Amino acid sequence: MNPFLIDCIGYGGLVINLYSMSTKGEYKLRLISLIANAVYILYGTIISATPIIVGCTIAVFLHGYHLRRLIIKKNGND
Image (cartoon, rainbow, N blue to C red; front, side, top):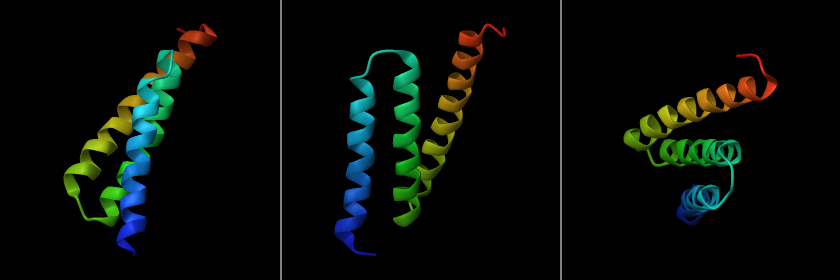
């Protein structure tokens, strides 16, 4: 794969992650962070960086868990 494209994927994840930190509300922050971490997993897979893959996979599960908790709380199904 083209090194420029690989870098673009990595920087894309960075931009999405930084954008998530500028959003208001926990739901939006976690959703956008989950997307950013999914992009980082793709990037880590391409460059064979196991620590990036493992760390971002854990982050995706944590964000997913908290998003689910927020949805349940919003719907009143405690």
